[in-house]
Amino acid sequence: MFRRAFLGTLGRTIPGLAVGALLPSAFSAQQSIGKSRLIVRSARPEDLETPVHLLTTWMTPNDLFYVRSHFYTPSIEPGAWRLRVDGEVGTPLELSLAELRSFPSTTLVVTLECAGNGRAFFDPPVAGVQWEKGAVGTAAWRGVRLGEILRKAGVQPSTRYVWLDGADRGIGKAPDFIRSVPVDKAMHPDTLLAYEMNGEPLPVSHGFPLRAIVPGWEGAYSVKWLTHLQASARDHDGAFVQAGYRYPRRLVSPGTVVPPADTEPLRGMPVKSLITAPADHAAVGSDVRIVGFAWAGEREIRRVDVSVDAGRTWQEAELGRDRERYAWRQFEYRWRPSEAGSYVVFSRATDEGGRVQPIVPAWNPAGYLWNAVDRVRVNVGLTPPAVSSPAARAGAIDEPGASIAETRCTVCHDLRLIEQQRLDVDSWRREVDKMIGWGAAVGPDEKERLVTYLAGRYR
Ligand SMILES: Nc1nc2c(c(=O)[nH]1)N[C@H]1C(S)=C(S)[C@@H](COP(=O)(O)O)O[C@H]1N2
Ligand SMILES: [Mo]
Image (cartoon, rainbow, N blue to C red; front, side):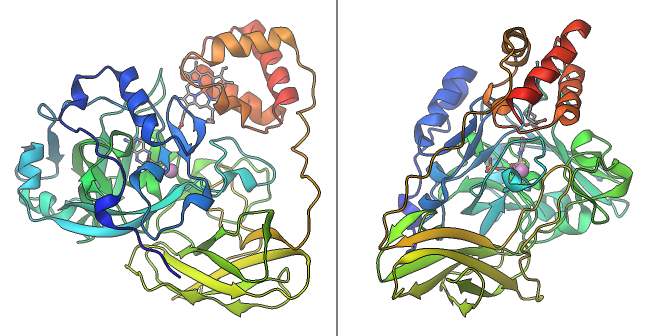
């Protein structure tokens, strides 16, 4: 039946007071120890995905929780760390960790999901970390209400947004990661400044010593390594507010380049479900537990339906007892197949507002909010043919092109960030231009050769 994790046994202890003394490299090495079962989309910066078959409990242990960091993980000395609160406030504040911990605390179980979770499934492919299904997890976050700190600072009625900034800095000339939360959501009693995750101090990868938790909204609102809150009468004008985390206002043809003016910021999250067992291509017997999770941002899950015949008929799954407003709900459907064969199993969630998962999610240029009806193929009493791994990518391996990529493109990050993309020439040219803008030293004579090489090799 449904299994629940015990708070006390989750994750690993992070020696919060000692970490500040370590060098940044030692830091990341220490972090990856506990995360060894995750899929490395990039080691530097750290983008780690949870294999979905490991999501067996309602609460995700810290060492299995996905990590999404745009830039290098900052090293913070907790004794010297302060949170600045200023802008449209009567009394600017500078709070130490001890001062923050002296406010009344609140604990909420919240599912956090990256807006780009499922990006790998969009067609045509889009640039970005190629997350499959596991950039999502659920934890108990303990901290102080953001609204309480803002009130303490005497937040002014002129405030319409609260800007959140963390200690990480853009690599090269890449812009700083700053996010802007509309004041109603910032003042909502469920929006937290969290210093604990599943009963432990925040792990470094998850934002030690303090992060925002903006429940029911895509993960990028939950800014890690917080150092600065600024109340403002206007929205922030940085790239992570005006260009990133935005969605086309209208349905666009796949492949369209959409100017920022035709987009709006992502706010809540769509309805979604995920089958965690059986695994895709698993061999199963005659009594199968089909289990997974369903979530819908700020909304509750009303039901989950499962199909074991590729969508011809649907049966309602049982929902787990563990429930919290912003947390996913486990589902289970007991299936007793009577005939051997290869079956396609679907899960489809419906939320309290009647929203249902689509078969085909809307394509969008950044590959956000993938929420298709989930599916796995399973084999009942058959020995399936070995699934051949995708053929090595075709395309000329142009040696000079490869050496340009080696020398120019791995200065700031893992080559994996490049190898996982599947882009055409125009999309690769846009990526290379973006990287040149951020400081990649690609000579004018090198650029087209590099673009041709990348588009031939990684498409
Ligand atoms: N300072 C900072 N906060 C950040 C990020 C970041 O790169 N820098 N990534 C955001 C994104 S895109 C997501 S999905 C979540 C991921 O949180 P996690 O790494 O704890 O899973 O953190 C958000 N907070
Ligand atoms: Mo994200």
